[in-house]
Length: 313
Image 1 (spheres, rainbow, N blue to C red):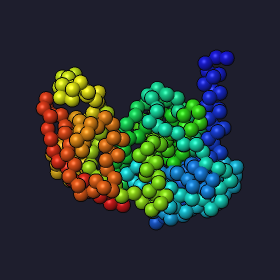
Image 2: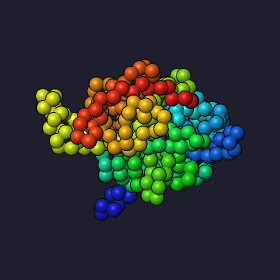
Image 3: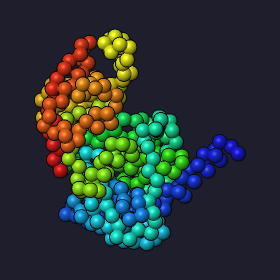
Image 4: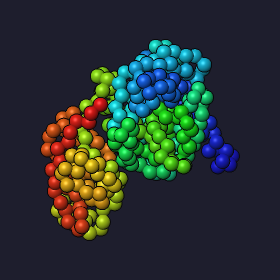
């Protein structure tokens, strides 16, 4: 068996495992009609999709891979993570196994499965291109940040938003969310943080989130800084921080004095290595509470205090 044959067998097996659990959504709201994909995650018809797919809608129609259709209701949505939970009145299949995106590595094979515009079983394959991205999403004049996304070169076809990104074992490790550019796709990871979001959506229909207004990307610490932190921490020092790519104008981070180009080292007196680590601090109990931040700027460590606000729905 050639390497190409082995690759094809993996992709085929994943498509066969994941495809039946990916459905097509048709929604109608005041904005008009829309479409996307969704992933069935339990036997009660609970589905994961993107918040932007169901934005402004309370219900719609869902078509499954076997050709059956049903009505669905939107339970809740979290624009910051671009995740939403919906429930089908009648789902013909049990839920798919969710994996752990924290175990992903750059270069690892992933398969994107969608149901765009009712074309069931649309499959593309590629690799994880980058992890821990934090990117802005602008809609209706407002800026929101999609945190800790997976970047992949698996092509995302129109209508694939809300579909599954799976690993080679057929476990869903992400929900496809957008096309950032030619050859670039993004997915919201399935991990501890997103499971917490999903629990809140399922229970309350919303997630109360604290908001800083930072767009970041993981960045290795300069050698001189790593040595300084190792001396301060008795030999223990993180290998990376978060480079501030953008500070949203008028945001809590902006008011605190964080600048584009800063290297964020600590948040809440604890090291921050990735966007997920920062995101874990920004739930309900962080709203309105001063949050100490330490950044590295022009060869010096600078301490600032930001007061996160509640992200409006």
